[in-house]
Amino acid sequence: MTSILIVGAGAVGALFGSALARQGAQVSVVCRSDYDIVAREGYDITSPLLGNHRFYPHAVFKSVAECKTPPDYLILTTKVLEGVDRAALIRPAVGPRTVIVLIQNGVDIEAEIATAFPENEILSGLAIVGVGRSAPGMVNHQTMGQLNLGRYPNGASPAAERIAALLNGAGIGCKVTDNVVGARWQKAVWNATFNPISITGGMLDTAIMLGTPESTAFIQRAMEEVCAVAGAAGYPMHPKVIEQFIGGTKAMPPYHTSMALDYKYGRPMEIEAILGNTVRAARKHGVDTPILETLYAVTKMIEARIRADR
Amino acid sequence: MTSILIVGAGAVGALFGSALARQGAQVSVVCRSDYDIVAREGYDITSPLLGNHRFYPHAVFKSVAECKTPPDYLILTTKVLEGVDRAALIRPAVGPRTVIVLIQNGVDIEAEIATAFPENEILSGLAIVGVGRSAPGMVNHQTMGQLNLGRYPNGASPAAERIAALLNGAGIGCKVTDNVVGARWQKAVWNATFNPISITGGMLDTAIMLGTPESTAFIQRAMEEVCAVAGAAGYPMHPKVIEQFIGGTKAMPPYHTSMALDYKYGRPMEIEAILGNTVRAARKHGVDTPILETLYAVTKMIEARIRADR
Image 1 (spheres, chains in turn red, purple):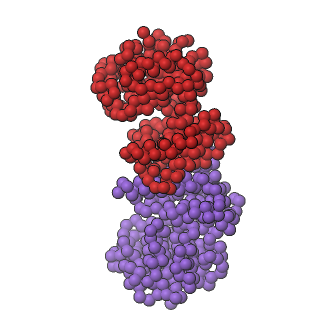
Image 2 (cartoon, helix red, strand yellow):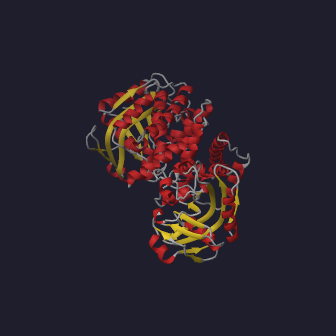
Image 3 (cartoon, one colour):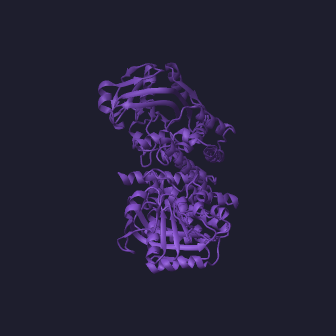
């Protein structure tokens, strides 16, 4: 039986964990903030894909160190935040054959883990899913539900195929890619632009950000900068990617980015993982990204203001 | 006797108007929002320079058209806002020999008036004064109190010297310059950077904006862009201007920019006069200003969001 430990099991982790358990995996979770209720009652999940149900993990741990047997897979679903040492966080449960799966936002987020665990296989995953925590232990899955998964830094992976088979079997679309870093860069074209822009001046939704030809042209220029960085890093983007992202966003009802929601609710924002790492890659490869640099400078000031206000 | 009409007599107009009246000028005002109380009771002014006193204008008008005799000087102290036709506003009171004095923020704000009144002398003025309206008809002058005044587009002006003599006589320092456009560009180095940055992500004060070496370096690069535009427009800045502005700002207690206060209180912001005109001058002269363009795009989105929230 495949054993899986989900670390930082919030909404995304609980949803995928439940799907994996349904296909027969032995799924345990490390869950700090909602520990009491999850240990007692499991997760209460509403989902159009999995149905409304309760998910009882095999074991519920308050910390990683409580997991005494290294799992076959350790899935990390925490936010990627400045000052949080993810390698130290997971180390107590990583055995020599544990496959480490990062289902997290941002670009260039894998190297830190790969360096810390040079012998372990690293899988990198991009979740495309609208799911949130509506109350302690309650997971509200609203739309979509897909995972793009691949071996870091690239290549085929039977371990990824096994996870994909389980998820697909449960009704969650999971695609295995041999170019997951390229997939991260593609996602960054949207994420590293709309997210930081959305938190300037209070919260800006997608309709405001694409509200005029001038603002749309500005977003396009920002996206061109991300594409230039991706290309310099060895992951050239398809020429139509910007057009498709902007067209796709315009076609949706106005909505708030994940960073705007974090901003609104006073939660930590993934500025470094999403934008800071993009800017650092640009500097490393000598790509001029004045729009992204401006957004980075301003969003760091916003973070400083929030810290000062506390 | 010198007749003066102050149009848009808020805090700045009332303070300067009172000083001019004290030196014997016949000062009338056009005052829309506080008309009733000012017509009845004049202005209640507290000021370290002029003392605490009441200022009774020669006449108080509700609109410019009510002023039937063109004044020697028409001083315009309104904000410069998109969609407000300043030439149409003042036209009813402008006679063939009326000197038009613009005491307003921004760069490139004179051409519109000079074009509309090609026969009239235009004076352009920069107020350096900490003064606000604390209640209807009440003017609270806190710090500083200086006016830099000059003929537009340049050159000597006996008319400016007369105004300066009156203000200096009343204790308000007034310097006449033959390069007032250059003075406006110099002020824009501060204004077109700190002001728009300060309204991103809620309100950022000067301590946050200059809080780290990275944020300070960012402000410097933004200021360098304004200096490059000024130079291309024919007004080269002194090489030390950026250093002096940043040093001077750091030496002050943390404070909020005028645009941040407008943002906080839901008042119209002078984004076009201060930043938009700078960006348009850059485009006209072929100067690349990606930081200013980014700030301009973002602040226009903020304006759109505020409009949408109403």
